[in-house]
Image (cartoon, rainbow, N blue to C red; front, side):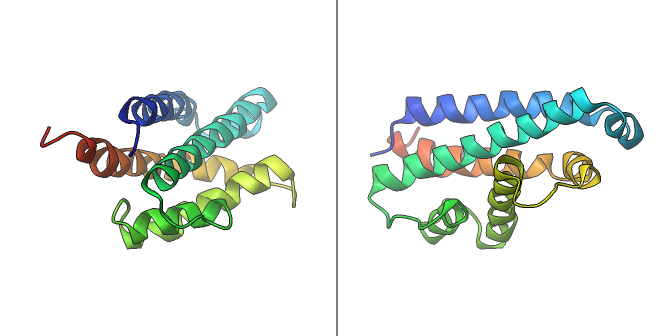
Length: 145
C-alpha cells in the first residue's frame, strides 16, 4: 500500500523545485543563456524535479506490486497501465526521463537553448504529474477522503 505521507512529501518537494524553476523561467532566454550560474541552477533543478517524479512513481509501483520498470522512462508507462497517468501524457514523461539522462550523464552535449526552451515550455508537465499522482495514489489511500 502506498505510504501517503511519503508520497505527499515527494510531491510537495516537487512543487517546491518547480516553483524555483518558475522563478528562473521569469528571465528571458538571452539573460539565461548569458548566465552560467543560472543555467547550472536550471539544469540541477530539472535533474532534481525529474528524479522526484521517478522516485514517486517507483514508490507507487513497488507499494502496489506492479511490474518492475526496466528503465526510468518505463516508470511512467507502468503508472499509466494502472490508471495513475493518462496514456497521452506518457511520451512527455518518458522524454523527461531521457532529458534527465542527458543532463546527468552527458551522453551528448546539451544545447543550452534546449534547456531554456524546456524551462519556458514544460514546467506545467510537472504540475500535471503531481496532480495525477496525488489524485490517484494519495486520494485513493483514504477511504473516500
